Length: 66
Image (cartoon, rainbow, N blue to C red; front, side, top):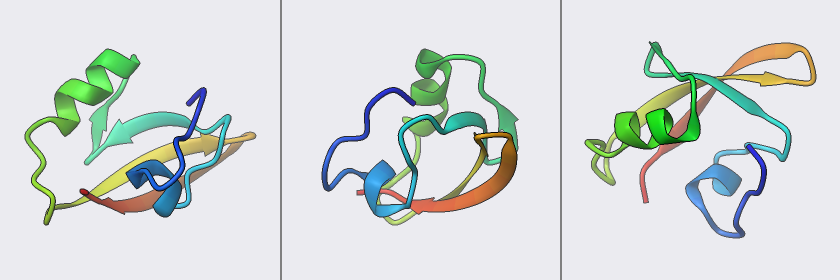
């Protein structure tokens, strides 16, 4: 991720600048456009799970839509 907008889902979920999203709901992410395509069907009440690489540490981060 390059930038995280204030009060965005990314920020409220705890994502940090430099985090690299590897998966969304266990589906491989290879580009920002791919991440957007996978996230588009999610409703605001849906919970999702991101797999991110943060400075060499791979972790799951739960997120909820806006």
